[in-house]
Length: 447
Image (cartoon, rainbow, N blue to C red; front, top):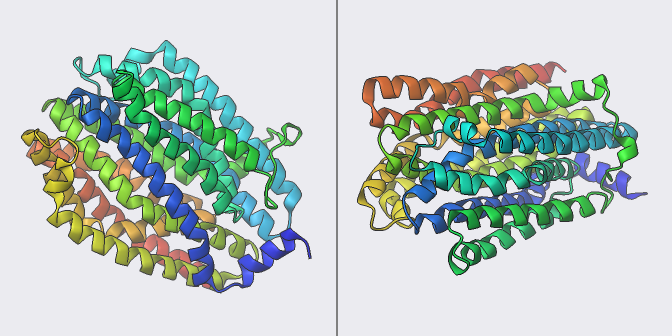
C-alpha cells in the first residue's frame, strides 16, 4: 500500500472527531502565530505615536484585498484538489495545483506594480488622512514588494492543508511568523525605522515563508508544483472559481468595508482609526482558533464529500460547530470583563483610545458566539460546492452586512454607530447562515 492509499483510508475511515482534531491542531497553531505577528506590528508601532497604528490599520484593507485574491486561487484550487484526491484522480489535482499557484504569482506581481504607480491615490481610498499619509506611505512600500510572496504563500498554505498536510504547512507559515516577531523590534526600535521597520519585517518574513512552503510542497506525498502542469484553461479556472468565489467575496468585500470604516472613523480623528485597528487585530487573534479548527474540518469535508461519505461530512460539521461554539462563548465573557485592560496593553496612557477601543470590544463580545456557526457553515457550503450560498454568506459578515451597518450606524448614531457596526453585522449574518446551512444538510441527505 502506497502513501496515497494510506492517506485516502485515513481520511475516509478514521473517526471524524479524532481526524478533525489531528488536522486542526497544526492549523490552529499556524493561525494563532500568524495572528500574533499581525498583532505584533500594531503592538510595537502603537508605542511610537497614534498615527503609526492608524497607518497599519489603513493598510489592512489592502492586505485583506490581496488575501482575497490569494484565497480565491488557493481555496479554489485546493477545494478541487481535495475532491479529486477523494475520487483518486491525482493527475487532475496536480494540474489544478500548478494553475492556481502560478496564476496567483503573476497576479501578485501585477498588483504590486500598479500599487507603486498609484500609491497615494490608493492610500487615500483606503481611508488615510493627511496626517497619517506619510506613515502609511512608508509602510506600504515594503508591503507592495512583498505582495507576490504574500499571495503565493496563502495559495501554498491552502493547497497543502486541503491535501491533509497541515503539519507541513504549519512549518512554513510559523517559521516566517516567528521571524517577523523577532525582526519587528529590531527594525522599529534598534535601527530606528519606525513604522517602515514593521513593514520591512513583514516583507522579509513572508519571503522566508514562501521559500519554505515552495520547497515543502511536494513532501510527504504532497502534490509538487511544476511549470509544465501550468494549464491556464477555461475548465481549470471554472473549477477554481467554483471553489474560490466564496473566499473572494468574503475577503474582497471585507477589504471594501474596512476601507469604508477607516474613512468614516477618520471624521472623528486618528485615535478612532487606531482604536478600531487595535480591536480588529484583537478579534482576529481570537478568531484564529475558530478558523484553524475550521481548516481542520475542511479537508475531512472535501475528501469525504468527494468519496460520497456524506454521513461523515455531517458528523464532522456538528462536531466542529460544537467545539468552536464553546470556545467562542468562553472568550466572549472574558473579553467583555477585561476589555479595558486588553486595549490598554497597546497604549496605556491614551485614555481616548482606550475608551473607544474597550467600547468596541465589548460590543463585539455580545455577539461573538455567532462566529462559530457562521465560520464552520461557510466552510461546509464552500467545500460541498454550494457556491451561491457559500459566496453570499462569506460576503456578509465583513462585506455587505458590515457596509450597511456602517452606513446606517453613522447616519443615526455617529461614532457609536460605527463602533457597533461589526457586532450588528455578525448578528445579521448568523440569521442568514441558519437557513442556508440547514437546507444544505437536508439536500445532502437526499444525495
